[in-house]
Image (cartoon, rainbow, N blue to C red; front, side):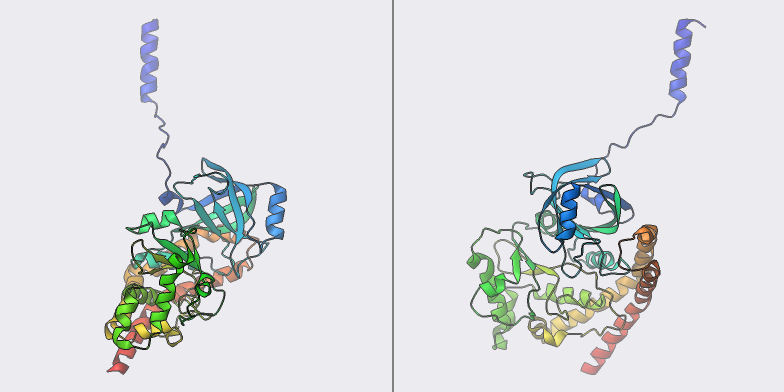
Length: 403
C-alpha cells in the first residue's frame, strides 16, 4: 500500500473508533449535597493530631487537615470535634472550616461543612429526611447527603454531609443575606420567659455567627425586646408588638412541621427551646427560625399535635389568635398530605436506607448492631405509613372539640 493510502486507512480507523470525551463539568455544592449518591470523603491529618482530637473530643481545638472529595483536595483546612450529647472519641462528629488557616479558602463556595456522626439515631436517616421535609414544605433548611468517611485511609463509618448554617447558606436561601445570624445554645431551660433587662442573659443563649464584632446592644437588644413583648400583659397590643420582632406566621408553620415530624427536642422541646438558628435580616428587627439537628425526629407515630405547647410562652400566646391557630392546623394537614402524596415520606426513607445500607453494616464504629439498624429503619417506615392518617384525624378531633 502506498504511503498516502496507508495514511487514509489509518485516519479512517481513528474516525471509526469511539472517541472518549472526559466529563469536564465542574462540580458544584449541589453535587456534593445530591442525595442520590453515597459520597466518599477522605481526610488526611497527622496521626498525632488525630490522636489528640480523639483524646480531647470534648474540646473545640482545631487541627490542620486536608479534605478530599473526587478530584478536589483542599489543603490546610481546619477540623474540630463537634456535637453536644453526640460527642464521643469513637466516632467523632466533625466541623470543617476551610478558611480558618487559609484566608478566603472555599470548597465549592462553602467556607465550612459539618460531618455528622449520626451517633444518636440508630436508623442514621432521621436528620436527613427531616431536613428534606422542611425544604419540601417551603422552609429554608440545610442540605444534606451521605458519605463513607475515611481518615488517613481508615474507614470511619457512615456520616452525613451537612450544609453549615453560615453566610453561604444565607446567600442561597434569603433575599437579604447580610443580616445577623444566631445559633441557639441550650445552656439552660428556656421557654420564652422574660429574662430581664440584662443583655448578658440572652448572650448566653444566642451565639452570633455573623456580625460577631457588633456591640452587644446592637446584637441583643431586639432579642431582649422580643421576649419582653412576648410576656407583655396587654393583649390589645401584643400581636402588633411581637410581630415587629418575629415572623409569627413563619413561627406557626415551623412548629407545625416539627409537630408532624414528632420532634421532641426542637422549639417546643423537652429541655426547653432547642436546635434552631435565629436570623434577623438587615434593616429590620424581625426574626425568623431556621431548623437544625433533627436526629431525634420521628420519635413516635402517635405524638400529640398539641404536645408541649402550653410550656412555651411565645407559641402559647400566638395560638390564642384564631387565624394563627387555624394556620397551624392547615399546615399540619398540608404536611400530612404532602408526606403521603406519591408516598413521598415512605419512598424517601426506603431509597436512602438502600443507599447507605451496605456502608452502615460495614460501619464498625456505630454504637448499635446491624440488627438494631435494620429494626430502626423498619420503625421509620412504619411512622411514614401511619403518621399522616394520625395527624389528619387529630386535627379533625381538635377542631370538632372547639365547636
